[in-house]
Length: 235
Image (cartoon, rainbow, N blue to C red; front, side):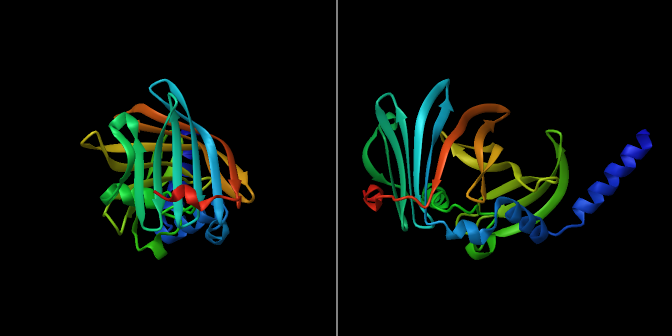
C-alpha cells in the first residue's frame, strides 16, 4: 500500500511538472475568473481590518482600476494614507513624522502602482513586461505547490508564487522587501477565497518574516463598479 501511494504521488508530481509556466498561469487566471473580467471592472472599494501588534485597525481601499489607488488605515484617531494616481504617488503617516502629503518615488511608488490594478502581476505579466519562470514543484503546508518566479520589469524585484496544484489558486507568495532599512523575505499567505460577481478574491491574508506573523488583513466587503470620487486621489 505504501508503495502504491508513493507511485501515485510520483505520477501526480510528474504530471504537474510537465506543464509550462504559461499553462500554469492560464489555469490560475481562469480559476480567478479571467483576466478580461478583472480588466473590465472600473472601480473597487475594499473595507476590512488590519491586525498589527495586537491592534485591530480599520482599513479602506479605493481603486480606479489601472489608474488610481488610495488606502486609509485608521490608527488611534489618525489616518495612515497611501495614494497612487496616474503615475505619481504620495503618503501621510503621522506615526513616521510624515504629517503632510509627501511624494513617494522608487520602489515604493512601484508598490503603490501595483495596488492600483485588480489583476495581479502574475495574471497580467505579459502586458506589463515581467519575466516568469517555472520552478520545481514543492510540498508545503500539506499541498503540492506549483512555483512561478516572476521578475518585475520596473524594479527587478523577484516574487515567487506558490500555486495550489489542485485548485490553481495562489497559496502564498515570497518577495524581498525593505523593512526598517533591512531587506527581508516577506511571505504572504492567501486564504478564504470568495466569489464576488464572478471573480475570486482572497479575503484573508497574513504576512510573515522569519516565520513570525507581523501583519494580517481580513476583508469584510468588496464592492465592484461603485461610484468613487476621484478627488480623493489628489494631493
